Length: 105
Image 1 (cartoon, rainbow, N blue to C red):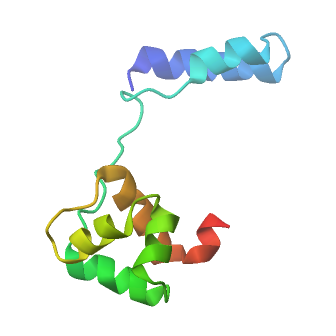
Image 2 (cartoon, rainbow, N blue to C red; image 1 turned 180 degrees about the horizontal axis):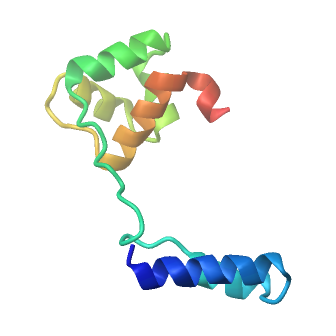
């Protein structure tokens, strides 16, 4: 972030904490943008990694597909490395791998 943006955010936070600035105006100023944060690329899962996560969760391809919001055919193609999961699916795969099914309940 630029020095000016940092200072502006610090000032608006102070004014908000004092009750001088309303919540809507505060949120407009402190809203995160792509320039403010670095979002790392998701892990590019390979077929055997998808199989390992599914087995770790003790799920059939159909149940795993329902969890991920895809078809069982898609899971099959991922597992055979015919196709690869899209970014959003990769992010969810990481969550499931690290935290299990509890992460989505």
